[in-house]
Amino acid sequence: MNIIIFGPNGSGKGTQSELIKASFDLTHIESGDIFRGHIKGGTKLGIEAKSYIDAGELVPDEITIPMVLETLSDVTSSGWLLDGFPRNVSQAESLLRSLSESNTSLDYIIEIKLERGIAKNRIMGRRLCAKVPNHPNNLFIDAIKPISGKCRVCGSELKVRADDQDEAAINKRHDIYYDVSAGTLAGAKYFIENSSAKHINVDGTQTIEEIKQSLLTQLHR
Ligand SMILES: [Zn+2]
Image: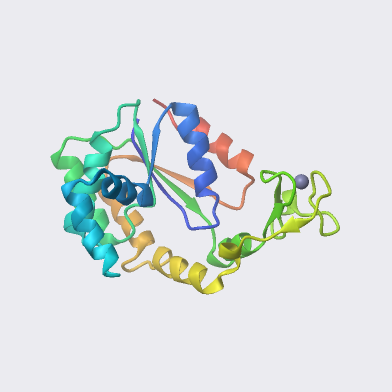
């Protein structure tokens, strides 16, 4: 079973990807891992990509697309879950064409929908329990709101992660994601309209458990 998942930062895409991966024994391929894997492995594509990254430039699609395809074709589990790619329309076009040329089936396109303002709040509202890192706390999610400023599970102090408070970086990522003319949402639309894969729409305002259940009832081998 091969799946592509779309969702903005803050939508819980990473969490859901882990849950889907575990439920269906899929290889979770996150866009950043693809570059890191090829660069570490010293592949021809990795060496080319590194020269762009070192120069502070975007790696062109002519290198990125074959790298993604190679990574997908190396998967030995019962399928893959592609996360964080394509990021724009041109990548979507190239990837869809390449999947079809290589006779690679795509079964599902998952899209977690969440309004931009809510997604941003959810990132900036994350709080980490000082004692148990996986105690979930978030100022903007009612189900896991801290209690009197302390961890809702164990009462410990809460911390923030610096990345989560970097508003400029969050805005930059969301600018790319929510751009409906050339960005990720445009790429998702292109994929949905031009691929025969089943499209699963998920309301990102639901709880992690609700989203998981909704996905599990809609995904079939
Ligand atoms: Zn705690």
